[in-house]
Image 1 (cartoon, rainbow, N blue to C red):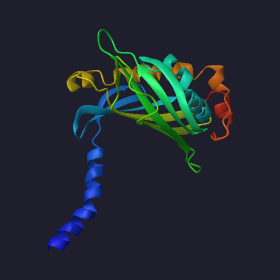
Image 2 (cartoon, rainbow, N blue to C red):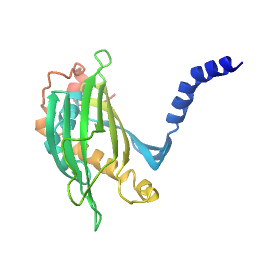
Image 3 (cartoon, rainbow, N blue to C red):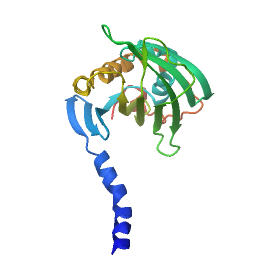
Image 4 (tube, helix red, strand yellow):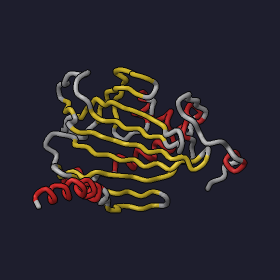
Length: 227
């Protein structure tokens, strides 16, 4: 009986984890944009997920997301970014600083970013996770202890994509979790607005990347048609 119980736990435990991870709650809905939040284990800070569409190609979006130097121009409260080490065209380590208001210390982070495209579906996945080392602690800046963001970019046509953005973070310091949760969607929503504007610049609209394959253009895509 004990052996059977252990076996059943081994079979069903992964599904229990998946069930817990799927408990997203809709927080906001506007046009094609939907914002979800969920509680996380061992932290009072919620995770956030945002679904939205952008009139741009896979290549254009990827070129923008991969342009570290330009991040302060569209990411909310992003004050500074720089590449520390580029491991390949699709993998790098970079430093960033987030500007905090009033008397709070700015937050900074070091992220390792990895990008891949599914050769069959053409879906692009970009994952960035904080990593130790590379930059020593800086006075009057709080090093973010947890930062994980994921981008899933699905082509709907040659010139339109569906994006799912997911963020799990802890800014560190003594900020109450309830206060963070209160405005958890403010930064991502402002950043999405900036992304939609920024990606229309010729630098990204006309970009060519050897490691990204777009869907072929059709007459509808060529004339600005939507699905």
